[in-house]
Amino acid sequence: MIIGIGVDIVEISRVSESLIPKILSSEEIIQRSSYQSDKRQQEYLAGRFAVKEAIKKAFQSYDGFKGMDELVILNDESGRPYLKSPVYLDKQVHLSISHEREYAIGFCVLEKKEL
Image 1: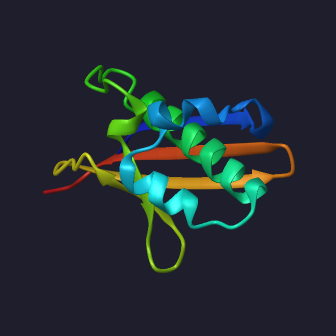
Image 2: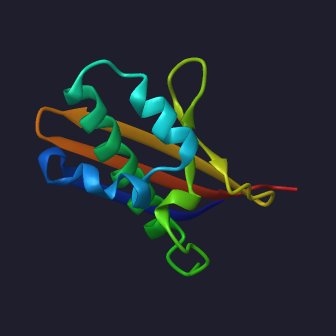
């Protein structure tokens, strides 16, 4: 059963590199630095910002997030983003990130796991 949906769009150029410590976890900073071009690094940062905002919106009644850097979003072997941390045993978190020229969008569907 779906219990929350969140979406966020951001203009890529508006996400400042000075926000990196507030947005990215240490694992995400390492991932971002593996990209060679500045453009791709900026898209990565904006995409992570957008999807973390989407997660917060999907969890609208949950105020336990202290900062975006606590949310760790990695990619599986096929490139799909997933929430590594925190782990929610009773919830499934589905994520999508997309970039198009000037914008990045993040989407989150929060689903209650059937036991």
